[in-house]
Image 1 (cartoon, one colour):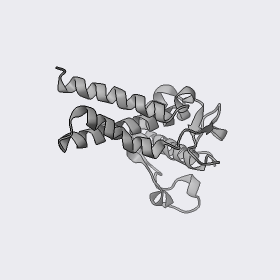
Image 2: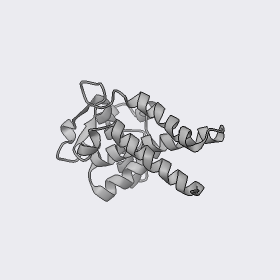
Image 3: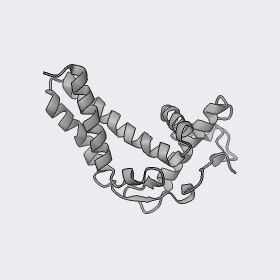
Image 4: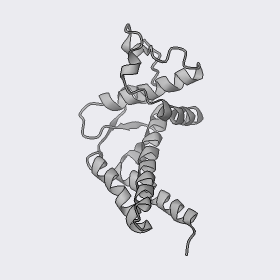
Length: 169
């Protein structure tokens, strides 16, 4: 019989593999392309990437102008009415600073978020009395439903081959 830690490790690996499978072919192009889902344009992923880069850049300057993001210029404080993603931005910043590639960091954050979502769902089901294997199997279902149409990966457009800087005006 395996320990609880061993079961959680196995579940985590399985859920990470499910995230990779559900987002395929994203993992084959992690460093060069953003996921488009069912959209024809990259507006949403590019804005999310911009938001994460803004978080990273502002973290490095102690959030000096955080709410006055230049994408909303000349309106001061407008970033507060967006989806600032400060916690996701912390993880993105770590990955971006380690690898130097914002598209790669964005895609790794996405895969990590899907995996953690599965872990949280598994934990919740276990708390409700569901045994480990069915809990892990059921935990993948929300991700599968949400991502069943997210198999389209498009070019990262302006991000391709160079850094995407939110500070540029």
